[in-house]
Length: 140
Image 1 (spheres, rainbow, N blue to C red):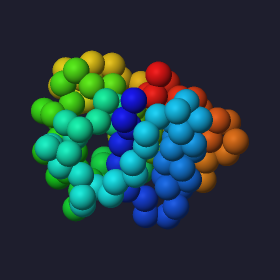
Image 2: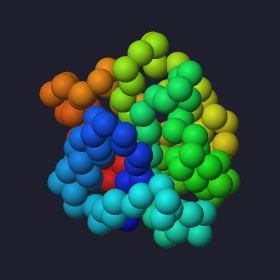
Image 3: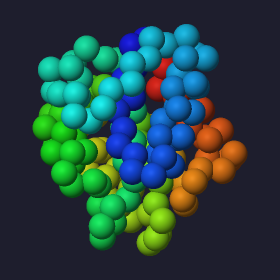
Image 4: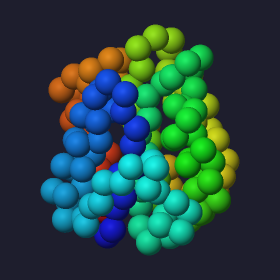
């Protein structure tokens, strides 16, 4: 199983979650590649069996708008039939950004949507364990 982990992190919280997703996927014997949103593209998405996307809540409960959102919008049609996982952190609100992101992704025709895993600020052990499980599920 070939897995991509594509994430944006401003404070390191989502990066810690991405590392836990990577650990879980590697433990499940997947080939894992971590790719920045700037490097990820629709054609690159086609090379992977599963993709984990991580982005914190920004602004008014939305995805990071300068780098992550344009990349995600571009690759969304390439996710049809793929296993996709979502994760991210937030510092305010109630997780609305993730509910919106999850619905948008689900309605795009992905094969299987896993997660999401969200953490308020720095992920605690429970959130990190959930991220490891998310990576393992993506790899199976």
